[in-house]
Image (cartoon, rainbow, N blue to C red):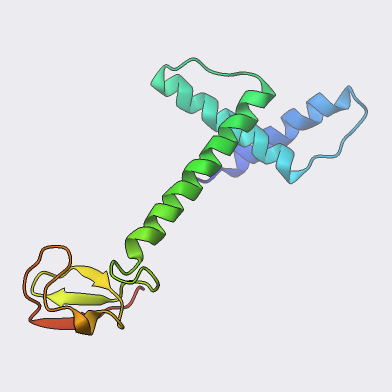
Length: 130
């Protein structure tokens, strides 16, 4: 997710307009991100024709939901990379001929069959994540 410089400048000006009545001119990065995320959320809900929340609490709740979703996705991706046998190290060995990458270098030598598809392992290749 990226924001253009025009969007950031508009967000800063909007915050300054709101703060001018209160006598404050300080603009924090958190305020800018809240405005940008709220606008992004509103655009998304407009596209999907969902009822939109216009309160500040709703937009903050939406950003927390986004954070939770990202953390959950990160956890799932780490789990996918994990060795399916010991669940301790990352999977780094590809089995031949099937090509599944499901074991670490410690567990792979003990495997006669691929844990995923049960085909006989004819060879292994050490892989590296670029």
